[in-house]
Length: 590
Image (cartoon, rainbow, N blue to C red; front, side, top):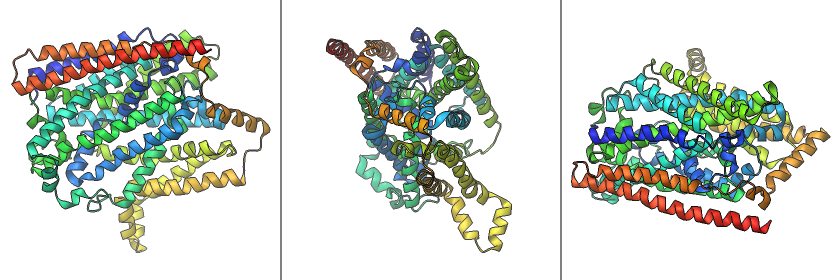
């Protein structure tokens, strides 16, 4: 269990993350700075942030449990994330940055008009709030019983930490926090993987001890998986992450080339990480660890597979870093959601409808108020979920995103490839998708429908649809919504001359790289030096921990993490020198 060193690591993390908001408090001069870092954030920091915003505690809990129960099929999700990001690096990331929008809904408005912007806000903001609340609850329902923390208090502390950081420091604190949390994960993951392979005698013996069905990448032996699930998951990953309304993550970099680099870096991190994250839960299965006996408080004890191996293998202090990694992964999702949604509320609702003449100072204040309000709603929802029992939180999130996320995302990807789809095609496609989700996801679970199916000799089909709900919802949505969108485009193309001109101008801008003058106007970004100082602080703290009484193995592991942060700091100083030279060259060329 956790000891003094572990709690010291956790306490320092809380203080450190809370201090990030104060550290970046002056980088919020206007709404562009507050919501997207002025569009000049370094690609390496954004790439790590994109990785952390998709990555969550689900990796160490729900996904680890799937690896324990079903094997390598879990890799499909993470390979799907990597494929999605590599596609973004080749196609979508540069386009999204070249919209030159401050928040994504401004790009949606340019492409599909004001109604679609407001329609998307009406769907996207509540959806992301619910997802964030489910993530926060999913984190705490795992952390609380495993480490014997109070569930409701954990929700409030984690929520307050994110709200404070996002409110004071804006997007700079959010993205910098994500980068630091990614840097915390890397050495811990490496140490955990090394100890796991030491326990099993290597990768080959580990795989040899697993049931043969665990080596099937389609998971065909496990209910709900199979080839159809693999196809559905890849489609869901690609469409959900690359849609126009999901482009917020690439609006913050300096130009389209940096957007590509950020996407590629995040994709590489997913490929490398997925090769290491699931070694511990697979080893737990291979070693016959009885998780039900160890964690009777959990409704799904397999979700504690990673934590169980960490508690068995890691020396003092390192388990605290694992807890920090699990907490940070979920909080990175929540802080992005807060900053993004506050930006949408302020730039797409408050500014155009309530205060068109608002100053930049007022917009930043409105952003802070929106952040606190939305954060409070997320915490209250998570507290509500904590009163439920056996909520099945991780499967709930997957189904929730399939039923609501897919209908929203499908027209937002296809719109990249046609100029003539009418504005109404976007929102009506989403409505069609919601109907499809209800018919394929909600209705088969209703008692009255099951009774009707039994009378019509369709009980087996309904049972199969229910067992494969995620796959059915995603695939049927993809087929039906795609057919509907393209049918609307060809049979009723956009005919309004004014809108045709506006959309043509939008696509011209989308394909046009930022000019040297636009890039140079953003100024020299000294973020690498500032992040290097943060890495120095963490390295010093970990170095001091090496002086605390501990086993030799524990000292070596903590020392390795300290050296990793020192090496990162030196690399960032080198990047700072390159950035200064780059901007100087641009100014000379203008």
